[in-house]
Image (cartoon, rainbow, N blue to C red; front, side, top):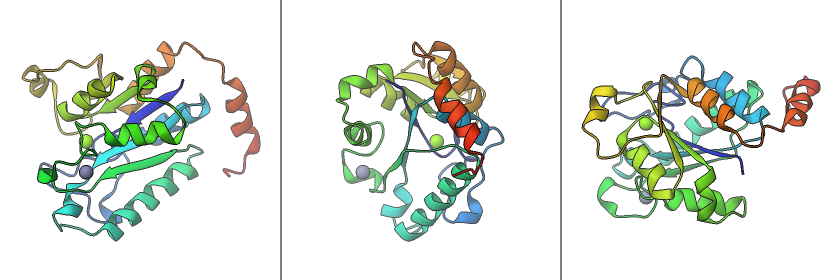
Amino acid sequence: MKVVFLDRDGVINEFPGNGLYVTKVSGFHFLPRTLKALKLLTDAGYHIFVISNQAGVGKGVFSKDKLDKITAHMLKGVKAAGARIDDVFYCTCKSSAGCHCRKPRIGNIIKALKGIDKPLDAARHAYFVGDTEGDIKTGKNAGCKTIFTLSGREDQEYMNRWDVRPDHTVEDLYDAVAIILKEDPYPSRERGRRASQGSGSGL
Ligand SMILES: [Mg+2]
Ligand SMILES: [Zn+2]
């Protein structure tokens, strides 16, 4: 099974800063090698899901409508690069809401897997890529392999204080993808690669 779960802020796009949110399209900036990385994963036949906490919506800092616009903008950029994100799952609840979808809880991972008819057990073969301890905990709670990227909120020094250890620590999503593809037990998707190159239309 080829599934990768990605945090959004600090992994796909620039981290907006501690306690801050991306509240509008103009505040969303892809990190330098994100689109290249997503293209590689797409061509290798991976399902890609974004799992992100956006409590700013629940707190009234920005609206669900703004969040939807940001998501549409992100997906458009991804598509234009010849890559594909299967689906995006947010927790927009307040941090205190006690919901099942807020990371490090795994409600959104279960939902994503259900969407491709997989039980939670399948997460053992999936990766979770994130820039915070909460992301690494999420991945571990679901049973995924975990990759910590230094492209966002937390650094090596933070990591020394964590009570979890990621399986890998890398600079950014591109380097995370390099590891995923290297560890891939089924590197058999040349077909997908050729098909997407051959189309040339960018869909
Ligand atoms: Mg993040
Ligand atoms: Zn929630």
